[in-house]
Length: 288
Image (tube, rainbow, N blue to C red):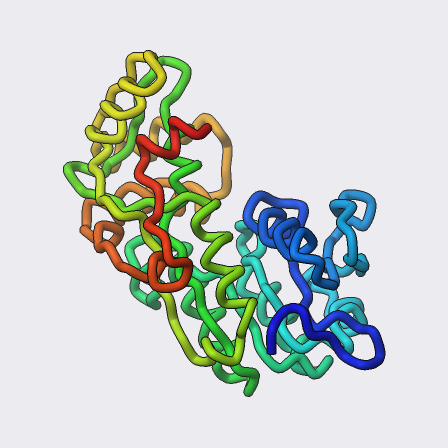
């Protein structure tokens, strides 16, 4: 079923979460531009984008009753992972259970590249747990395992122009949110054709942070360098943020996952889904 089709009771066939953010917002806007109806499920209705053909329903992932009401009649759900928190997996499980109870048939979930219960990047473990709960729910699914956002890497340098982290010479096949949105739209255009599929979405190059620094320098004229921290240095340099330990572990493991080789593999899944190559970092910076 295409995203153009909707139920006879006028409930849009598709619901989108995360429309107030970068990725979900791109997807929701593109659906509206195609003239398709959709339900935007948001935590704060006042922040929902004003899009033609979109109805807004307010619900947080942890509020099962409100989520079920918001999703009644929806057939396909584009579920953007919740903001990082200590209990994010519980939030996800609550929302997935609500979707199943509401009769949702298919979930397209934004997971993470290399999702695994023993992943070096700690938050990839959360994504694996979420995937398992979706599998156990009985709904059909498509998992979009997105690698680190290229958009994030362009913002890594501190005010002093230094990228710091224990990444060593490890590489990362970062991918732009624009390319990820295009891939998601391809899946949402015909969810049935992608039932049970797991796509690992990467850029078309794997760069070390030294290379990232050089490219940013070349494209922006700002002098950027990379400093490879030791683990103790990494924890010490982030101690000033007074963040909880789980969050600091996530920040540091962003880099150790690169050093371990978890993030370097390159796939053709963006091209397979969209028909175009993903952007390189240099191309992304040229267009930013």
